[in-house]
Image 1 (cartoon, rainbow, N blue to C red):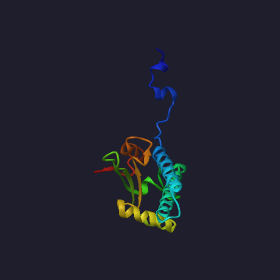
Image 2: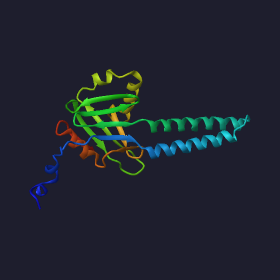
Image 3: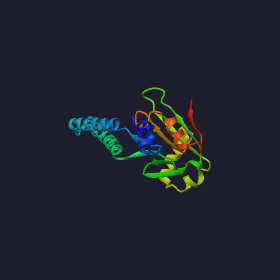
Length: 188
């Protein structure tokens, strides 16, 4: 054994112990399956439609499933919904990115999944959300208002069935990135 091989792996290769960014992305499998399924159902309704009153309802159902297929297919094209690194957190709400430094965050709460069909949630609570929310377009502000009514925080991202985190231990990964600049806690 040589002196170099006796050193720990990190010292042998001068690897930096930088935290790896944490991301939450839309689930490609779920949205792809829904898009294909909705498109097939839309084609089925459209193929059986006619000009009779029942046929008109089938055209309406075909249109609704076609819209669902397009919405699910669009979810396949979007990238990350949340990115956390050693600088801060960035969330994508609609087509807008909202970023904040760890120092400006009051706390991050993580609601873990309770069962397979329920999504968890990462909520970012800012010290002063006013300037961040005021700078958003009105359509994005409507989404953040709905977030606040549903989750208690304007800046929240789901994860679980519909969105996949890059690390399984969400609380631990965010805690390591926050590095005592803001508390990261699990909501019970």
